[in-house]
Length: 182
Image (cartoon, rainbow, N blue to C red; front, side, top):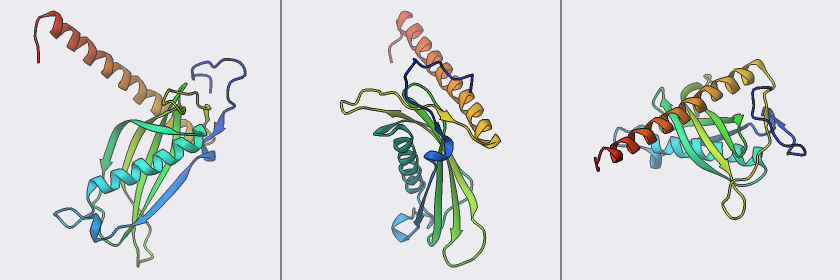
């Protein structure tokens, strides 16, 4: 796509979205519950991070670390006995970072009803080398209209992340300049 940052000649060839897309499935047990008897949100968040990390590592061809979780939405409770499917794909890439979109689906393990969406999340991963320093990643090549939409939406989220970070930094600098200490 033409709206991605230009890359130097001889850089890593791009990869299509499907090259690293994955699904992680897990059956929920009593060990996963919270005080209300449903699956603890933290258990789902770990599955989300695991699936997203696998996708980021596949896409980048090596280690990638979680830099941020922009958003985690829980739409429906997950119950003991649910078979949870965590579907993840790279939505956008920068020079060393990737946004991974995750959809969480759940179905009863012993029923033939369709799975329903119970959550979604967006995470940012940074590819790192053996010393923990950022390393370049291949551009993601959106293949379908849905992939292209996700790519464009990821760019909007990135713009908002950067603007939020800049605004907070400016506020803190102003407070220090005004002699206000926290």
